Length: 111
Image: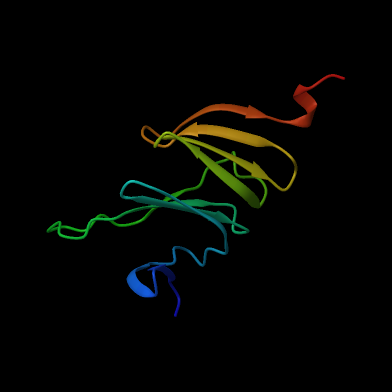
């Protein structure tokens, strides 16, 4: 299958559509939203719209901040996402309004 399976207790609850050949290394879930990130340098936001007449398509978040593969992600509350990339940089963004709050790199730090 080309999608990402979401299983709970052995029952398949749904299958997430693979967007642009995404290679997933991390999956986060909060309320009715799934976020995936990985080697393809993009984050995809899926909204669980079961029971809704018009299903919302997955939204790929690709911008110039994704210069490297995404290794790990963490979610604070339901809208603050932090993720680290292969080059060691960390990006913090608000997923609700899709705004980057800050980007931390090793060049920003002094010993």
